[in-house]
Picture 1 (spheres, rainbow over the protein chains, first blue to last red):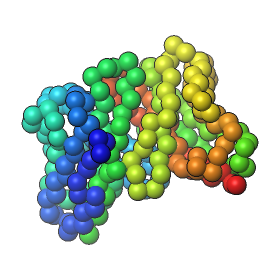
Picture 2: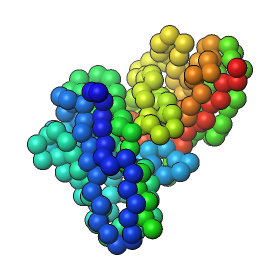
Picture 3: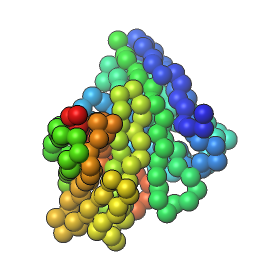
Picture 4: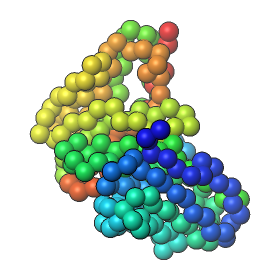
Length: 115
Length: 111
């Protein structure tokens, strides 16, 4: 399977705990995106990496959120001191070096439930 | 601040007929538009895109129309098939790499 993979698929945690999600993009895709999607809404942009550099961050990304892509391959999204409002589907997407289409390939997402 | 809007949460169409999904946007700086299809428990899948310098792009049964003066985008599916039943999102990009998505339209194609 050469698609975008995300782990875990589901995460249930108690309020105040820290959680970390992983995204493995399609091999050789240099661009990686994180989105959050809540019920009845479309994906909301969180952050974007080109290779290992985090180039854009949304205002939605509070100080409790941090994302890394240390070697320009997989990426992690950490949420510290989780709140119930963090409950959502977290989607990762990657796109290839060719910018002509900017087509993003999405993973299946990690569903976070904060109790 | 919803810059991309899909005002119809759901749409039902008979198999073989045309499905028309609509999308409106507010930011005149958007330069690239995309449609995604999403099945339950899966991430969105890219369907078709259009650059702001064009007004139409066609790919098989799928055609996207862009009316920049009206800030309106539409996706036509002809003929509609039961396998097309899914949630459809339109998305738009400001030059750069930040994409804005609509809230989605759930399409049901009735056999």
